[in-house]
Image 1: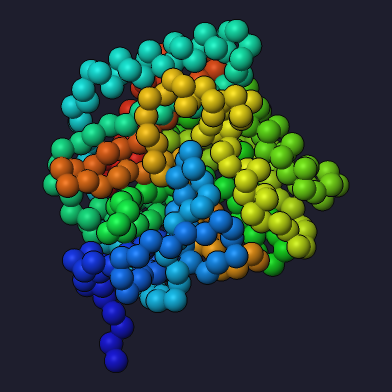
Image 2: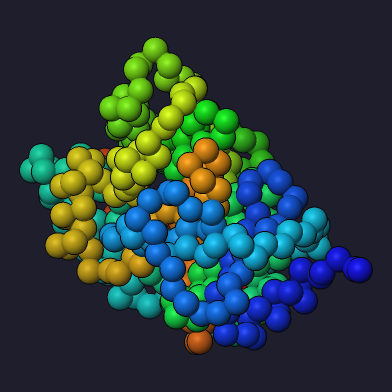
Length: 347
């Protein structure tokens, strides 16, 4: 019996009234597929499942998931793809709305209400999308990202290439990261990180460490030096954190780590309140968490960044920027445009 062809299975599932997800974990070659026989919505309140989880930003649990009962895998080498420089016409109201939100945020920071906040924006692109080519191009361009294509007839269709792991658990080892600050990648790999980016990264690391210390003694918590991590056309400041521990309460840990300060704000609760009052954007699955869960001792969850919702007219791209007291609104807008190029390059 011949092995199933990835593109053929993808097209067949997309044309049927079935829920499915294709995904490839970072630094691997295997593309996995979970699919349902129908279009029913299945939810979970915890991580005691076997399947692929997809969670919204503002209402993380219960989260919808697709069981791994029906599972296929493919050793897929995507064809070489040369990305094109995309020039996208973005409505001026997007920029105006974003800069207005940045200025409101800076006032809240100046008043002491916030230390940092991530401001998001949605960029709509009217363009016919070839779903499989889009997915294949992301696989080719971003081997170090978590690349996925999620489709649910009673939900939505999303695609992405996320650089940020929320956390993983394998054989008693918990791994997570603190990621913040953004600059364009350059071939010389020399970067002039300013105080704004360094401070933002330091705060994110402190919050993640503090959250982990609620579950584990400091003596077992390992944290790397801050380093520059490449994510496609961008680079970020990053710290890797790990813990060797047994019997981790993964659901409680999930509730503590989401939303990370890299997608919400500092303080976290105040940041969520501020976003609800002022952002005026339904983030949907953007900055939520997603990934495969095979019981509580085999988990790979990621933060849903560099992602888009596929709609009948094209795509809605979601991007954001971390705002601090040192932020310059125009530069932050440029940062969101740079982040949009991650997915635009694959079209």
